Length: 304
Image (cartoon, one colour):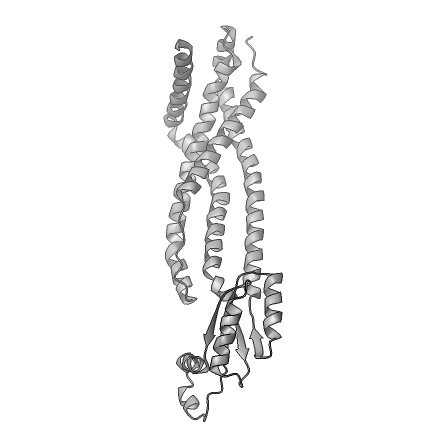
């Protein structure tokens, strides 16, 4: 038990010493932490924006609906029966009948041709079935072809190319995010490693004395590992604050833009999971960068 207590006490001492060392040089520590934080903001900010875009594309799922316009000769009871028949298909989530009277009322409301429509002897619009498919891609294409082949069908109107393009762009953005995260992670390891290398150089005489009196490499290594951890975690906290402030600045313009497109979507902020990811990644990269730097340069220091 005494050995465990001593071991934990050494780690706590090293950790508090690293925090005190960072706090003792506020300006230099802030500059170093800020540089690391900016590198963390790039992948974390991309992740938040991709998540928002995915959520927004989900709210536009209704845009994948398509319309089956029926022949003018099809009466309303037959149109209702056809809508029910379509809605029972496994590849259809929902099918709703839009009768010609309701269609004319909607057209009158948004077209501005109300007076012109009053001059018509009869309703020129057919019954229509609004279909929300359960699938996408090849399944959707097959569904459209089969409904278009029905004898009651006059026209199938489908316009989902832009939605498919949006999904392709989001898939590309996710892949770019993965590559960017890895590349910036390696860059951060080198950056933190270089910071720790300078710290090792500044404490060279102290390290030589510790080695001279028999101090182990593990004993020498620990303070630098915790110093790297402090820089990493501090950068993660600072990066989270930068992202929160940035999202707050764009939230209002983004809301106004969404309202112009008839959407009530609101930007999602930095979640607790995202914040924890930032702190965890920052801490890991700080520890790893410090570990690599110490392993590389500690071998070169021997008591003279």
